[in-house]
Length: 412
Image (cartoon, rainbow, N blue to C red; front, side, top):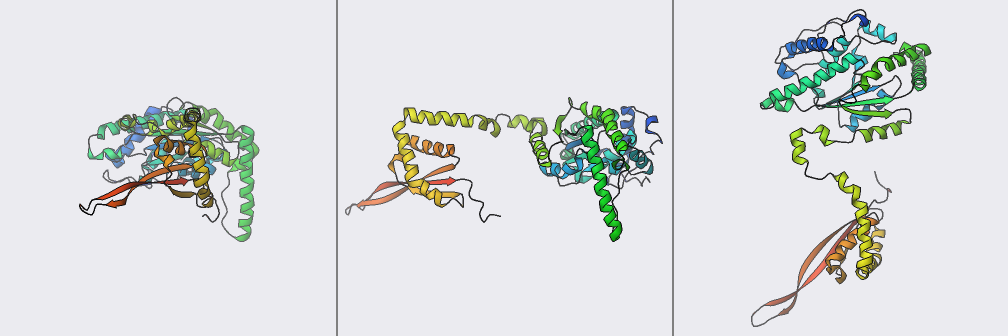
């Protein structure tokens, strides 16, 4: 990799501004001290960009998994699930030096120093300020420790700039570790299948003169594919497992169908304010109940109320059911396609406050959403010719609106 000219400290970092030390010829010979590696990389970044410009993503999603686990397949889905519009950071694509390519083609891994330098600088791109998904990082215990040091330094910068106008650029970091798991047999099968598919495409490309797709040598050789999986198990697996007690950890069974994996991911990545909001903001919102907490017992409470109506208010309860069956349901049925129906009624049974509650609960139990509005209209009945005083009676009109899942006909 050819290093580019460093930018002045006042300028924001760009993808082209990459200046790192050349990797050693043999990753096994490089220094494995995470603190030394981190301090070296951080010192270079601070010198190149200025400390005030070391602005990283608020949310880091670390996507790991064995070869063939489906990281590339699920990447766009994960980005959409988190509302991120940036591309993912594929670490293997960053490591494109000749030395790195040679090591990767043999099923090995590039040195930690080069990985840390490239990944941390990439995270400074403005596109990743809200969040970034890193495919294939961290892969070693040294990279894990460097990641922890980075997050610690991010928090330190947030504290340092908290009472300054730059505060908004140094937000509380959130880290998710997502591991897609497949066993050795599945990994090898998927690697070789991928190689076969690319080879078929390349045969067509060569016949048509259109460019070919690069193929990993490990996708063509069963033994190389097996070695690549075992490298993951021996080094990367333990590294990812070590993050379980530190950050929010998601273990995804990736041996099932794509649709099932997606549902597993959605379930794991549900919004959790306690993890993502700043502590002060979360404490302010804590007294307000979560919708999920309310919903948990809503069904049981509804059943209790309906049983109570039948036992203790049977007459009124039956009158409301009869009103719904006779006057409201025919209108609802006629509006089955639209999914919304409105009924106006002056039925005196609704003058009882308990009747309105019963009506709403009955519709809720049947899967509808009912809203009742009371309109009071003054109707003139008598005029005193001597004084001009008009005597009115109050007419109460109940407007009942029922919403439900309508037909799919002519939708979209």
